[in-house]
Image 1 (cartoon, rainbow, N blue to C red):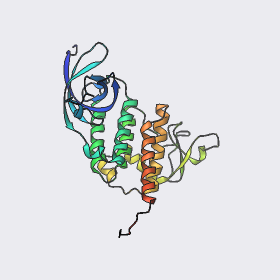
Image 2: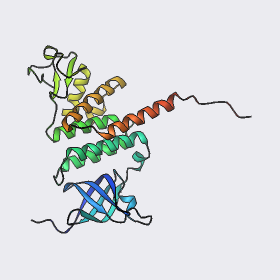
Image 3: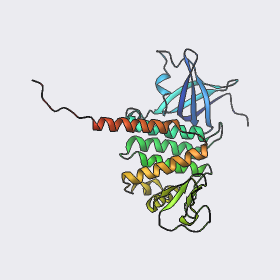
Image 4: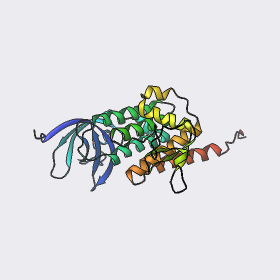
Length: 267
């Protein structure tokens, strides 16, 4: 059955870009129609009623009208603005990262309600949890698994033998973990600890509640992030801009931490 000229759906704003003097093009991930671009007319004007409802990462009910090239946003009402997330630079950087991944991994008009739900749940976790990186790792693995890119974590990708609980190697190019016997100088791979492999398996097979109970120290968290980002970049065959933004935010936080604070009382 043909889609009606005017239709409604819940959606999350992945990104926006300027169009002309007053308009914007929104990239939306919708619950019922997958990813699509739509024009928000006049939204950059000071008196626009829609402006506050179409900020990146906002979940909203949208009404769209079919256009010749791009659909047109006719009505919008924010459901969740994730204001606390957007007011915190660390959390915002993670939110923009997960939104960018969904944008880059998906094609227009391919419905994936499970990915819509995964993104929504992840934004809520990033906004509310003290540890906001664990939801990002769970999201990365869920996105990869849903779209058919799950890494091999149970057997060596080269010899197909079961992996021992020793330091193995991680090769994004080969699609997962390589055992010590198959590791060679020609292989682009880095060491991966037994604990990292265990947690990657939990990310793949477990529920978020299971993952959230694990106490992940800083070095293990960094190892997981490095492995997942390498794998994501390999699958996409390009960089993820928001990953660089996360690094920038971290460097800024470290500089602020190192800056001495004067405790003298002015006379």
